[in-house]
Length: 185
View (cartoon, rainbow, N blue to C red):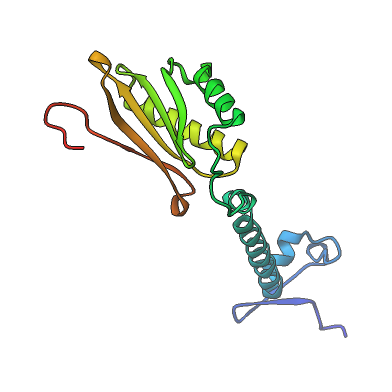
């Protein structure tokens, strides 16, 4: 065995490898991955499996859980009881909206009406409608239609925005009405 030396084959050429360069026992994961395609495939398979697991779990959480918690029952027919009136009073006095609400009340089993001053912006109208809808869902466990009216000059109330629950978009969608001389309701 005198003439045999360790050789490493690289693209058709033989390269002599010294004994100091062959630290097979001390090679790192990076070196082993570079030398072995099976480890690359195993790493790729692990990444694909973890990705599938996380995607499956992400699809089952979030808004779908919120939708499952809501009962399928309709709005209660007794919407003028003390609980609904207390909710309306509490919502009117809520300071987080940034403006004063003139009135708030349930006008039907599944409709909530809010009246605000005429100087409230469209963004604030939408915020108030979505907040009311989410609070009704969390307290009474049904989705109401929220109507926001602006109280103008001479006490005239005009419909400014309506918020409906849209299951495809996972939340309340606010539709604003144009108010003015040339506006069509």
